[in-house]
Image (cartoon, rainbow, N blue to C red; front, side, top):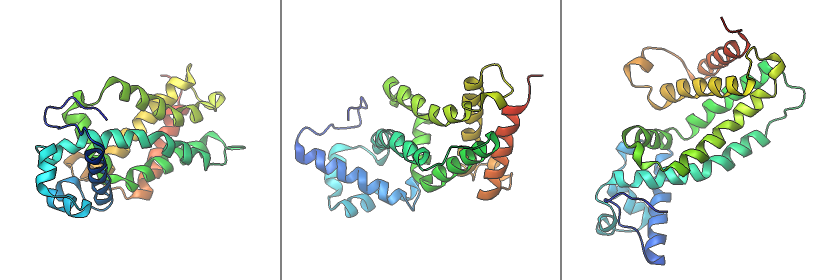
Length: 216
């Protein structure tokens, strides 16, 4: 891993790299059940069997973990997405069924890793310069996977360019899912009452309507 942040002391020795890896793994484990803001440095080093002094020898603050967490998440995204797609039985599906599966799996992925995804989403919003161009390119190729599945139903998609429409539709779906699941306490998200199952249904309805409605 290589980051340009002046707040991060890059590990030079194998032992230091192992310590960093343990700290990141422990932080991810804690994020399975707790928000990043609710995790303290003491919590992290206790789980990692390290020390507060060792942590601050490398980082000025807990927030300096975020670029590393983003990179780890990004590296894991492609195989995780591929595994989900491989689990689907695609033969004989209709566009309606594919849209439902897309909404169902997308919402589940956000729910499963809600705290981690919120942390990396905030990094991307607050410090976009921390996300290198190479990582942005990889992210684009990964998020194209669901769009390519949707574009297989080009004959049912009422747009001149089925792949372009699938990309835009998937972007809209993920944007709503991200806001509702990761930032549900915000006024605009909390004012719209949707439990997880209804969110899936309404997102599927939105995506299907977009893909099958001709241009005005």
